[in-house]
Length: 455
Ligand SMILES: *[C@@H]1O[C@H](CO)[C@@H](O)[C@H](O)[C@H]1NC(C)=O
Ligand SMILES: *[C@@H]1O[C@H](CO)[C@@H](O)[C@H](O)[C@H]1NC(C)=O
Ligand SMILES: *[C@@H]1O[C@H](CO)[C@@H](O)[C@H](O)[C@H]1NC(C)=O
Ligand SMILES: *[C@@H]1O[C@H](CO)[C@@H](O)[C@H](O)[C@H]1NC(C)=O
Image (tube, rainbow, N blue to C red; front, top):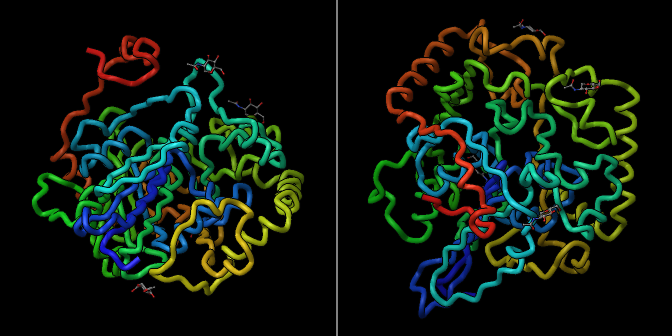
């Protein structure tokens, strides 16, 4: 290439955010890149093969991650709208009155429209690509919708909802689901891919929050983030592009003054107070078996269910089936992706033409990487009972206990006190939530199927 133009692709999730920065023809673009920001809202931690999923192979996304920066400590808000607002404003939802429950369901599956977007932009482009899949759809139709030809690829997944994708985002291993402050509700899937990265093909363990994208991408595009005011986000461009030291030491997960709960992370420690989603806590195995949506219903979930021997062995059989189903060609590509010690470099070019199974053997070198799996460690017998944040604060050390097995509040009272004080400081800066009753007039059915301002 050799010109000054580039693409940055960022992919944000449970909300996946993928930032991709690509070359722009030099004479026109000066030194500003194209930026493509892809959001796949509700994609769960275990819904990509670069996190080790063997149920849903995602080789093209894996390619971008392995040859970019794989964000392993990337956090979002537990629900969609606050995440999207933080992304677009660079401000934490407690500062934009969106820190409470906001639910917005999307209308019929319209992924195809987005997939058909193509661009040939001469001037630097910022493309925000918020996919509607894998988010659930409106309650007045099937919640999970997908074209038959895609569903057919997953015939080996017995569970209907999971097959339709993705039982609303499984977070395998991490406790909790969307809308909770457990790791399963806030730890996203993230990657950054660009030839502008000075260091690539590495896993970033630095904390990154969804509100950091705005100043980060602004800096990547040549802007000076210090001219942006009232941001809660940090400019992480140098950190990510050079694998340099972290820009944040703490992260507010949320404070919900209506439901009265909060969660904060300072250094490695995370404090949870109030009903952060206790009924939706627990550790969910991925939906696989036909009856999983009933027996693993979060309202009566117990660890017991996952440990039933017959179910466990049935799941293992299914895992074997995945491999057989995909066949040697696709599996070989996944094995390539998963083989360690891969070589990457700044001259790599992403080729979207090379979809599943089409990589020639001579080209295999450029798709290597090792899935980054979460290692939970040993689950103590009291894992399900040692924390009830409705009764007293729970404290976890996330780097050594990412699955929130060990509540250490009792043995580290001074850390509990310090983190609690930090929450109080955040409370002092909050704006009151602008919670209003639903207004039926907002329904897209009155506005040609689109979400628009309605008054
Ligand atoms: C959405 O999907 C449902 C069920 O598939 C269908 O009945 C309805 O007509 C669709 N609505 C639109 C606006 O396409
Ligand atoms: C990135 O930085 C970490 C921490 O300093 C270091 O361990 C790792 O080797 C670096 N990786 C690359 C590819 O530079
Ligand atoms: C709980 O699990 C049982 C099966 O063990 C199931 O019948 C029931 O519908 C589940 N859900 C609730 C909300 O009780
Ligand atoms: C849970 O069990 C572990 C031993 O496995 C023990 O060290 C810890 O104190 C227990 N936690 C609570 C809160 O009881």
